[in-house]
Image 1 (tube, helix red, strand yellow):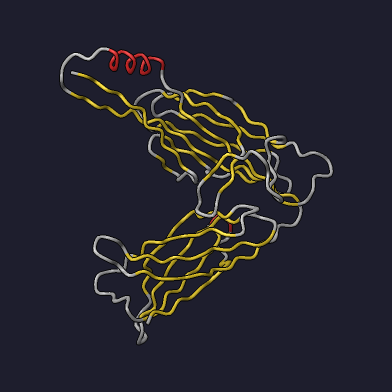
Image 2 (cartoon, one colour):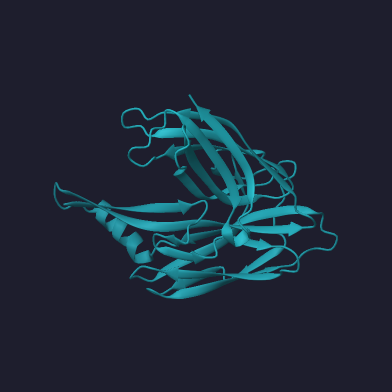
Length: 277
């Protein structure tokens, strides 16, 4: 039997509180005001010891929410890699155990006002025994069978943000359009989340349907943990709409709100409406 072992690398652009094999808290680090230190708790939720390598990297989010390496900074794009320190650089977490990543900020004098951001990349290191097993299994077929085993490796990007001076932001929801459900394809609401100002935003998008005739509003979609980073002017979204049974989307209005996360006060930053006819 030919045994093929594959390593699957899992990435989280915005890491949820509980993520596969890795539990991280918090999932964002923000230095502002007099804040100079922070920490991230890392919990291994598997039954095997795991080793992780840490690196501070510079990434750019495009308008579709994808992260790309930065070769040349864009105007208004500033990073924290020269002023944030962290330790350890590598850590091993026992099964069900936890470790702490400590971060500290050393701001240079006369730092220009605005927002600075990099990402802490947390990569699981491939175990040497597993690597040997892969080489041995692939190189020594024993029959005409095929056994594929996936070994997940976890990777996460945690934004590390430094804000200096006054932070101003203005949000707008625009370019809204609706595509009804078609066969196996879900109904989709397309929109642009536009940002202006000198700070990023991180919040939740809520879509409510207001039926024609005055029936009670119904929440039909919610997307938590959306970010629009400086210097990006917009984030383009396509949100799957899932109405409860019996709700007819052919007549009524969509109300879309974007609000800060509860831990940041929950303030509504933008609202948009789309009439359906």
